[in-house]
Length: 544
Ligand code: VG1
Ligand code: CO
Image (cartoon, protein in one colour):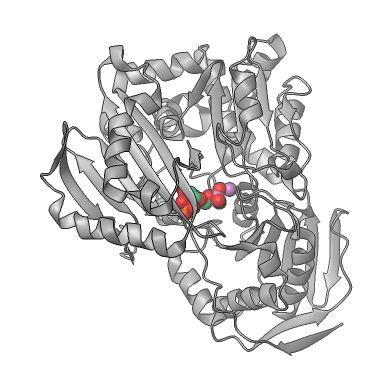
């Protein structure tokens, strides 16, 4: 085995987006494409000098090959120890948990999350830092700069390693430990929730569950924890075997892509709780019998009930949500007298707030919820939290939600995505909105009068770093809101996301169909951005 220094040429397009570098598999298959990015991370890290790193992915197509390359490069870059999930698997939250538990310097998480997988679909790579969370922008910007100048990378010539057998082996000067991908994570969950109570719920039949792993990474975690440790009925976890192409589906837990689950929850005999997770296990969708809980409501409900659950019995220090997320949690924070922070989209912005102990829970409208137990959003954690709540409150999901609305009012909320728009058209739409900002305040659209219009700029309250252009916010005097932003995770064209919400205090008005309740705002949004006409699309691609 010897270290080779291979020369290479930079690629211009290795700028990480909302969550790591995501491209078509075909892009990653270009000679040196993966190697360049990985070396840029090592160069940014500086001296890896004997450090421990963590490595694993969601099992999608190209996962295993990429892991072998990263192992050889890590050894050649002086990494002392690499913890790899068995079979090359680690969910995103489990990777975060392992980095923290073993005090690693960081880790590579291989995933394109909710994007489809397979030879013609997407792959991705993300670097997480020592706190277990996604690297902050200051780090990813340096990686990008390095990738534009890179001229060589280091790699060990060595045969492929056996990733399927637990245990250690040596690759050059580096120890590789193939670890159980579920064990550390499962142990952490047991400390946070009342497993005894949930187990007796399942055993008595008071609690029933359908968890759809969507042929992605949470299958093995959910089988072991929900059906194994917690005694949910065998078969409660469906689509549990991770497949390289997710069975041809979109591993995105929403009513559109998890339609089998949605159908089961609106069927004649639905289980108490329905849930699904995404490609890399950090998202969650929560449903009850004949009921869907929006992620923004879910965050608010978990916050309002957290003190009932063992891991959060001392109460919450504060909460945070990404800017486009619905403001239901703000009302809970106000009632509890704790701070609610508003961050840009992407989990990396919660890291500082969590590390500085300013917040305990945080979440995003995009089916992401989490807490200070790791530094990533965590799909299965949210499911366990809900199971704990349902078991303890002895109420249906729908009753818990209705109760919450009676107490705090309801924030009707929806996101409309227009996917695959030509980049120039999408940029034109955003530029036009920018131009409108100055003249919007005071303007009326029917009953809706604009109170605030701006381009969201975030100043991190912990380290003072500034992130500009994080989305256009238009707030109305009746506290309704429309937000426009472009996605930073897509790999084809551009995606315009339009987020609309309206607050309703009156309980007699809490049962309207969401799209109906928001119809007027949706048409104001169209009047403002004219996406239908400009992109030539009659409808959004996805409504969540
Ligand atoms: C989307 C979501 C964002 C989330 C990100 C990563 O980003 O909107 O809330 O943090 O995906 O989630 P964008 O830039 O496409 O809107 V995941 O589960 O892909 O790691
Ligand atoms: Co994800």
